[in-house]
Image 1 (tube, rainbow, N blue to C red):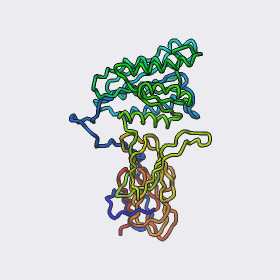
Image 2 (tube, one colour):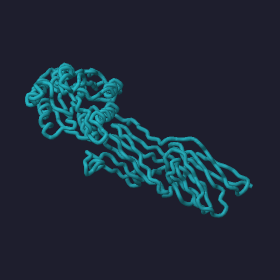
Image 3 (cartoon, helix red, strand yellow):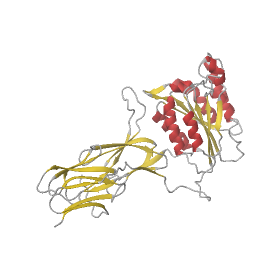
Length: 428
């Protein structure tokens, strides 16, 4: 597709020759693909200038038992998936809201998952970050050191969580909540051969937590659990007025966690995507997001969501679910581009571009490629022709000799948000 704006400010690279000789123009320098993440300007604010809202206190409670070492899909363990998603969660949590407090409790992180390590592991449940403000560095530090180790003391963790929250005074509107991520059932409250007693202990602990002065609501993520195992944990949500959802992949874990945290008004589970339009010009393509749980029949996952970017829909896509999406488009010369873009909550992820303006030709055929050999253009150069390209270095090569061309070869750099115009001309 030939793009011809009527008027464009340009960055000109030119060369002058004394006669109809072959011109060689080389401009060296690399510019990477520009992907920006922009924070929205407009948010609801209180009198202090900070985002408004009632006090929200959230404790992330995470399972560090040995079963987290199991693969959730080929080459990806449960712990790998959890770390990836938790990093995205921490990125999305705002640091500048005085009404928001996020803490971290981990359990099953000491001892080991053998009988000899059970006693120590079953007493391991620690509030490693108090529920006081938002410290992203500390939260990320916990995620980075999180490894699958021991047994699963869920009941003990719910008991100890009662002391993690301040009491809620009468007529107070604050929200206290625990977001529990576990990939197993209780293994510590009773004999290992008496699972029914273990399960009952969890339900009792959940009711006691609901009856505590802080009375937190518990949102449970059953990671890699069977339907029967999820049914066992349902009492935690029921007894505390919370919810339970299962997740069997990193994508599902991301969706569930952001769903819970959005309901608690901690984060927004969607962001926006934009292809930079320069003088109204941008490439037409698609943004593909999601894919659901992988299966043997469909290794890539379930049905993705595909957004079309074209003249009718424009270059901006709003309300995109957070996570990794693929932006794909085709250059006029047939080169296909596919970029991974990370959609973050409450942010605009922008793919930056550049316009490359061709010199006027005399009917000869030129090929324009990037440094990797991807064909951007393979046709005649006509006066006023533009093409939208990613920032980088591009090579123009003469393919078909017609008449007396003055351009044989050129290499030019295209910078983000600019128009690069190559002018080659002769002088008497």
